[in-house]
Amino acid sequence: MEKLLVEGGKSLKGEVRISGAKNSAVALIPATILAESPVTIEGLPYISDIQILRNLLEEIGGKVDQSGQDITVDPSAMISMPLPNGKVKKLRASYYFMGAMLGRFKKAVIGLPGGCNLGPRPIDQHIKGFEALGAKVTNEQGAIYLRADELRGARIYLDVVSVGATINIMLAAVKAKGKTVIENAAKEPEIIDVATLLTSMGAKIKGAGTDVIRIEGVDHLSGCQHTIIPDRIEAGTYTIIAAAIGEEVLIDNVIPTHLESIIAKLQEMGVIIDVVEDQLIVRGNKRMKSVDIKTLVYPGFPTDLQQPFTTLLTQADGTGIVTDTIYQSRLKHIDELRRMNADIKVEGSSAVVAGPVQLEGAKVKATDLRAGAALVAAGLVAEGITEIAGLEHIDRGYEDLTGKLKQLGANVWRENMTEEEAEQFQNS
Image (cartoon, rainbow, N blue to C red; front, side, top):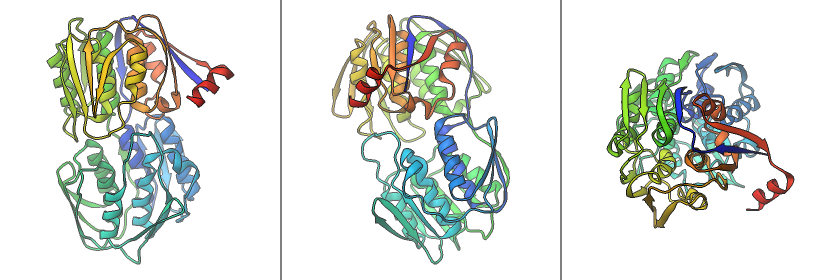
């Protein structure tokens, strides 16, 4: 078991290139199940979630070839093998196997998904969609069983805007008989990315990126080549880090329109950001002023950037309020930031952050992926050395975090924990 050590106080400058979008990749890979010939996805991030999904495809008979950031999946020999346990449990996005396998085989058995513990994240809207398309859904011994004689298009209104449900229903509906309409659909860029892949495979989808998606079912989907979009959350994380302790940082391979909410908030704080085609140039400001943020579904402020942004607010003048309306358990990083001398109070689903304060290096642990990003950002601005445990969370979503930070001039490195440290971490 490893820990990450971060020496704080070093100004960052230089260039960092953003990897492919994790939140797209975890849906694009299961989507390949629907094709009848090989699908190549280019530009995937090298993160642990991708390797888990690759192994799951191989478990059901897929042939997967990986060359650097590109993966080619031959789904022709896949079978509807039950996936009740094992790797499915490690990854919440494994629920996309439900929609993809239901779409192709008209049946699936998938274990209830794992991933970061962010409080209740029910899949009732997914199930509502599958049932509307004609599937029978049951929960048996901790696994979801889906069965359908045939899938028929339907009009489905999502009670809650859900990225996962929107994508999962799309996956199931592209080969259903007739027309499916998803109303109150999520609008995230990752949904457009998945729709683009499916359309390249031969699906008929209109309206992806709006709140009404229309799908005309087709009988066959074929292989294709697809390039993934850049990761807007990784881009936002490095933008926040550059704002906190950057001199001049160039962030390459971004789609600026995907980052409008975070750019607007940073500029409100006094951070200088220049947008040049697919790049951002970020210049930190030692006299940032505090702001309030509230997470909302896209195009609002992303919940996945709330945690690193909380760290940034500890360095700003005044008091900022951070409210997460998406996940009720996404304030677990606050206790860890307090260990580092942050002045933060939790009130319900909000955190009240007073600044500026001098953060101090400490031993902390990442409780989930984006909490890990918040602690890395804190370590970079803190005095002394910060030791971060729980790296398996960070490795799920940030490709080569250590290498990219070193490229910007940070002093970060990984070390093996002692047996005593590992035991303390597992018991904490």
